[in-house]
Amino acid sequence: MKQRINRKLGLISLIAIVATALGVTFFCYGLFQSRVKTDLRLFASLLKEAEIFRAEELNDSISDHELKALDPDELRITWVDRDGTVLFDNETDASALPNHRNRPEIAEAFAKGSGEITRRSDTFNLNTYYYAVLLEDGTVLRVSTQARNITSVFLSALPVIAIIALIILLCCILISHMLTTQLLRPIEEMVENIDGSNPRAAYKELEPFADKIRLQRENILASVKSRQDFTANVSHELKTPITSISGYAELIENRMVEGDSAIHIAKQIRHNANRLLSLVNDIIKLSELDHTELKRVFEPVDLYKVAGESIKDLEGTAISRNIILSLSGRPCTISGDPSQIREMVDNLLQNAIRYNKEGGKVEVTADTHKGHPHLVVKDNGIGIPKEHQDRIFERFYRVDKSRSRETGGTGLGLAIVKHIAEIHSGTIELKSAPGEGTEITISF
Ligand code: ADP
Figure (cartoon, rainbow, N blue to C red):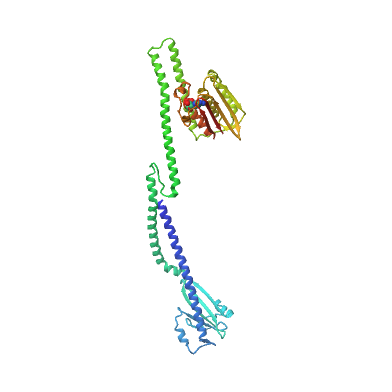
């Protein structure tokens, strides 16, 4: 990054230097050119006013010889007769020169009173500026001078420009290096301290970045902790039935089981094996739900129909506990995974039966309210004390451990319900009072 900033700043300063050098050269050259032209005009008008050139012969006040002594490189003077014949030239013998009538600046002077032109000579990097003026007697006087052209001016200034550019460039590189070091130091410090509990943003603009990192770390830590807790809980939950099964197997192995107790022990082994099975099943379901990257194919699912099927399947268990199940509402369809929705309704219904009392009631309602389908499972069972209500959706959280275990609970039922509701963008509402009952509503 440092290198990139330095390179960019270097490039920008180089462009700025070149642009400035070019701009200044063009501007100064423009001034220089107009100065040359003004001087020529001035010379011409002075010579005209002095009336040195008159009626085909030079004025007495200045001799041909004196004019010839003028350096033609500095100022060339050409006097042209009305027909274009050159009468005088301080550079070349006038008689050797061709007719000048058609020279653009002279033709213009004959026509308009004055004319000017600049001729470029690529070979010598020089420009020749001509200015011609019509005299009182109808002859034309032309003055001209040579001056360097822009390429030549620029080329001669190039070494100076290059040295200045180099100095400025070095200064820019130095300043940009200092600036980037200064600018990046707080960011580098922030990166070094990123593992700290509260990474502080080096600049106000980086605060959202620091917040995001903070949030991500909190999430990672929370997820690691919940995974560790989950693994510990799973191991603990699996250990109990396995220990029981192993103990009973040992009794049989040592021939310590006889008669009716053999049946009792077989029952215990089956009970513990079933518990293990339920646990493993619930863990598998949860891990499937945890795979958020799995593509979910949703289809229309009628909540009322699913609730009816679930009630039918659990009716036997309910009757054995003398609990009455009822269903009300009307068909209402959501978009979802049918097996997951069934799992969710089963879990809610099982809990309503499991944590109910002799002769209790469970009412299931599937309906649509203000365009939102919802499912309500209401019982008049033992209820949940206020202080536990926030936590019962956590994995392995149980209000009464022994009651849950005795009735075949794994402590994962509501965690699965919560997960499924989230996948289906459903919200859960819990109303419960100890001794009065519990009502759980899932709205989609
Ligand atoms: P479990 O397998 O133990 O039923 P859940 O996750 O389904 O696990 O429920 C967590 C705990 O919430 C239960 O152990 C129980 O204490 C409480 N609970 C759940 N549903 C009800 C209900 N309808 N009435 C009273 N308590 C409930």
